[in-house]
Image 1 (cartoon, rainbow, N blue to C red):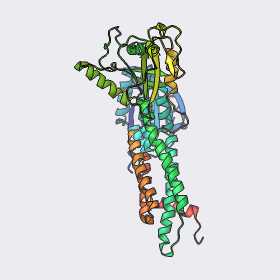
Image 2 (image 1 turned 45 degrees about the vertical axis):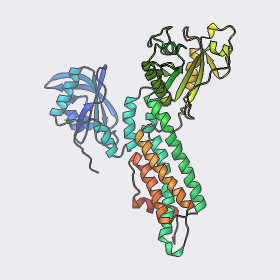
Image 3 (image 1 turned 90 degrees about the vertical axis):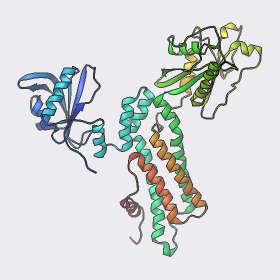
Image 4 (image 1 turned 120 degrees about the vertical axis):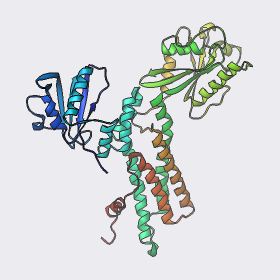
Length: 448
């Protein structure tokens, strides 16, 4: 694969801060940096992974006092010689340093080019490279944790382990093909099925984690649902600690979905305040109610809000909408201050939305509803989910083939399809012949 070693330059930090980092990377990065930088000694004479104070000058005129950090190839982010200048955050300084670097022989980096070079040089696999973009875009601690885990290779390690296990199965099956005339079975079919089922279970776990991973990245969708005038908009305002939704004693004030974001203990929630559910002939209200049902369908957590006075009049209200297995329902009783000696069942959260009473308990329940284990590998990328789905389908066919005594060559092809799908996530892709040979000679002793 061709790797461009032209020297590129670009700011590595967002504009507007007190400091700006300008990154040079490529074959001539050190020489170009020395053309601009004046320190105690030239960077060409310095060791890798060292920082040096000095100035950036042109014709005796000091542009800025900077710290130059040197990373020599191949121990750098891109795999090329790299120099990073930590400058003051002035827009003028940024323009001047970039101009001088370009005049000295560098060119402006294309969007994502530093990370593309890191991938091409083998410092990052494709999944890790994608995680860099997710890390930059992370807007919560949970999203940051997922991206960091993926960028550091924890996600790739889990996938590589699955791929290696499948590769061992393929090696066994292809060994049978090589000895086909002798009717030798190297892959015990019972053990083969057990191993494939275990791999299938792990692939399914990763696939099912996508809903949570995507929600943590984009914001966990939470729908506030209930009859008109039970306090849904007041609850939203209390959760946000601001008057975001219009509140009125008149039923049906909210006719459209209001969407706001809230962060609780590092997890970002996307709160949807919906129109009240009731029978109406009003066309506008019907449209609002249909959007409420749409919000219910896409929510991971549903806050079913009802008036405490309803419980006094009879049994506790139950949702009049379907709940999926992958959804969490929190039953919330509002206006408990209007009922004397009200006692809520254990599964019900009593609140007074008007005053904020019980809101802290509700926040805790919302956070507890998101079970994001820090040690668990979570899929948050749609491309990865599609690849895992393809792998799952191929593995299902392979297991079915075992039951129907599928010929060894066809069974091996199905497993190869699984390996290709999993490998596409990290860009390892199809099996190389040398990998099969490595497993054969590394695990078997045939005639010594």
